[in-house]
Image 1 (cartoon, helix red, strand yellow):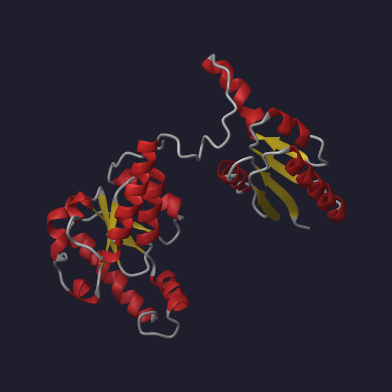
Image 2 (tube, helix red, strand yellow):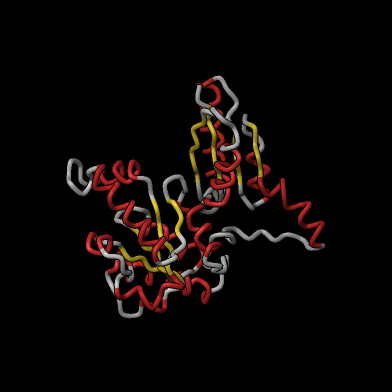
Length: 272
């Protein structure tokens, strides 16, 4: 039977959802269904979710698990009346952290994923706009302003990785696709030649690339496995010829890929 899991927050729930998934990922074979309920910021809303939790537990004849990041102490106390095992991340960490810092904690709802400092927020928006403007080689003028540039064959993961780095770390990342002409040449595309120090190549296995492209253009020459093999082989040869560091996107999540890229190019991961 699937284990019912409720992820509750009085704001977006992003933080507690990530934590719950990280913890659950440590248990092989865990059959769990996570339901996220954000913005539980009134007693009535909490009462409604308590009824839902209790009903699920009675129907499935099991004790649900609850992960909570509600800041308001009264709401957290109210939640404890539910018939479930409650994991409260603030009760778990704040007392010890407060003791170590010699400071009382404040009740700041949404502090982790709010706008916070407006200048920092504007930097994040600017980085996202940069990634969109310099996506897939769509713009060349100003490319030198990029913190780094991802290159690779079509559908190797360049766009989502650039956007993640922009949103998460305010990194101005551009990406440039390697076309058939580029792969048939031993030279880097002209716009990239003076920017080699900013380049990171993305590699991907032919089978994975074939699967991704089949979902986009099933039965096309673009998705043909032999074509995928030719392109990935030529891309790796180009990286080797020009001493461009590269990372395989085959088994990496976007988060892992972004972290590895920033580490490789020694770009600071600034989170504010």
